[in-house]
Length: 110
Length: 112
Image (cartoon, rainbow over all chains, first blue to last red; front, side, top):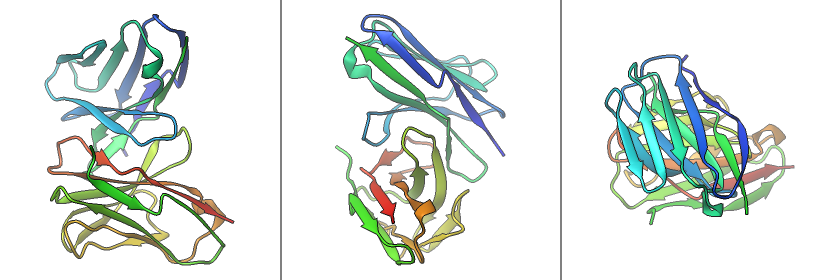
C-alpha cells in the first residue's frame, strides 16, 4: 500500500533558527495536506497543495509540492516557541481517506 | 473552532468490557473518519464513512465496528477491550474527500 514517510523524525532548534521537514510518498499524490499537532492535542489542518511545483506561504511557514507530486516540504523561518509540536503531511489513498506520514516532532529551545 | 465532539475525553476500563466512543459533528459533513494514534506516533485509519449507512474498514479495524445511522453521528464500538487497545482515538470529518479534515479532541483510552 501507499506509504508516506517524513524526515527528520525529531528536530530540536534554538528559537530564531529555521526548520524544515520533508515528506515523501511512494506514489504520485493528487494533493498533499499538512497538519500540526500540539503536545497533548489533536491534528489541526494547515494547508493543502494541489498543483505540481506549487508553493504556498502562511506568515513564517512555506509549503512546497514537488514537480512529480511525490514529495513535499514545510519550512519555518525564525522558529518561535509557539511552533512546538508535531507536523504531519498526509495524502489521499486508494481507500479514499488520508494516509498520514510518520510526523516530525519540533522542539524549540527559548 | 472545530464543531466536532468526542466523548469521553478520557476512559479507563477493564479487559473484556464493551465500550462505545462517541463522535458527533454539527457541520453537516458527509465524510467521517476514525484514526488511532499512539503518543507521538503516526495516525492509523480504523474506519471511514462517506455518508449515512456507508462504512468502510481501514487498516486497524478488525477489532472494532462503526455505524452511521445519522449524518452527524459516527460512534466506534470495541466489543471486548484489551490492553493492546490502549491508545488515543481521533474522529475527523470533511465536507468532501479533498478538503482538510477537522479533528475532534480525541478519546484517550486505557485498558487495564
